[in-house]
Amino acid sequence: MSSDDVTDLLETAYLDELETVMNYLTNAIVLDGVHAEEVKDSLEADVEEELEHARLLGNRLKQLGHSPPGSAAFEAGQSSLQPPEDTTDVESVIDGVLEAETDAHETYRALLEAAREANDPVTEDVAVTILADEEAHRTEFRGFKKEFPVDR
Ligand SMILES: [Fe+2]
Ligand SMILES: [Fe+2]
Image (cartoon, rainbow, N blue to C red; front, side, top):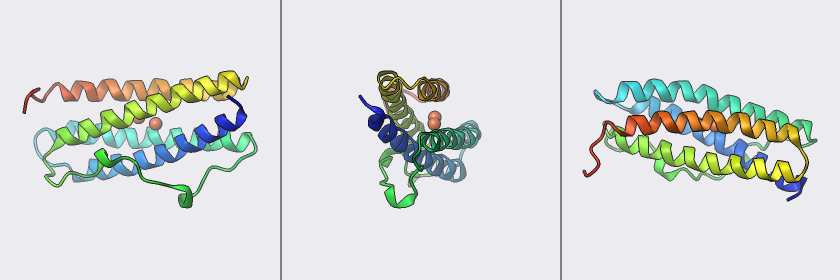
């Protein structure tokens, strides 16, 4: 692992965070029904946190002599987080969030490893800080998931 790997992972993570902002914001707006309110409030709060993650990553890229990417570099990947056709299908959004948070978890673990091997403790610190937030998000949505029967 080299500093190039660190840069690539910072760029990937930056774009992933912005896609997450887009989909959490959309789902916080579209969901309806009695199960929706808590989930919407949580998504709304997470939008701010995910945006802050992108800001941390972009600033770290700048400090390393790179620029965070613009939208031309963007490729959508979060198919499971698209707004559901049935706007009361809160569970599908919860599942999408759990998948996105697990993906984020893997990206920040990889960033942590790459930064460690490249002897870049500042990026390591950024990765640990964000990883802790993503774990909290995942735990919260695992809790929401418990509201829904297992076999439907
Ligand atoms: Fe994030
Ligand atoms: Fe998150």
